Image (cartoon, rainbow, N blue to C red; front, side, top):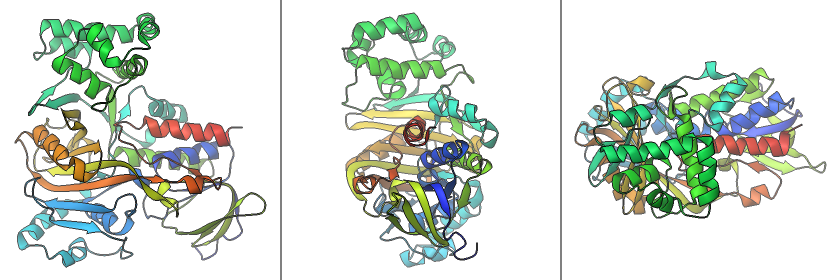
Length: 477
């Protein structure tokens, strides 16, 4: 692009960042007839939902990581999860993008053994698609309905999340989901099968479901499960922490719990016996790009690797946006939280671990969701194999995340991963990092719309709902 080519151009909306929420808003605004300029300072799509090859993942940590959101990235090559990190990437982002991976790591003075392990993995560099924020999609959720209504299913492919596991007390057990799985299960007693079937029948039948909501709306969900459905032990934990996904120690109303359970059960059977879909090639990034394509088809303009120098309010209640290739005017600005120059970290933190394993541990050519439960908290885990085209054949990736700082949750994350692996595989490379929520109140006070950073939920519906709220509030006709 020629320098200053954009100078003086006017847009209805300028969107900064190509994460999922920003991309949905841009596509909806363009489809509604708005002129849209969609900009990303990075040379890739996806923002916080991006996925990378192994070398690009390390490049992200060095060059593109937002230091307020992710202060540091700890990398352990081989070894045990309890070992000290092999190296830690911290400090301000570097502007040296075009460097060989091992050259970039030279200051850490890695041992010959560690270098050899990295070189072996980098031979399959492009076979890895590592997600910053791994998430799945409800078969009958808000995002799925949006993908269908926008007719962009051809842009993205999915694989069903085949299995669900509950890990606790040092063991991991597969939890049946569909009615067929419950009947076929050998881990549940006949009485347990009847209890679980009774619960699923209740939330599947609209009349019974409405009756339960009206009668027990003021009670706690846990109490409803114990008193009405007589659930206890592993079965109670499975419904609370794996299906409804309540945080340890939290309480939710029977209405909220039943609504979550209803959504889960209604998702089963739409595309198979599973409730969730996992995106191929890195789900969040692929879905974000599909909405970007839709925006471009509707006339949106895209620029990657474009720095934003300044944003100023004008006398006409518009905005002036200073970019590398000129200054544009916009009636409205939508931005990802990491574009706010005045943002500061808040106390809300999600700690994440990414383990590339030398073998499969929860099955070959499959995907699985798991929850690890102990007195310290509940860890969410996503397991993917070569079947999602995100890891070389014979290897797998296990993602784990939990709310809280790494200092508070490291041992919990480690226990969750070790229990799930169960000595069936060994880590080739492990990454630990924190994701901080940012305080963007000062930016929002200027009339700028700031999207939400990815949360600790396992699915992408919260991003879809947040984007829909922005569109209906600011861009509806």
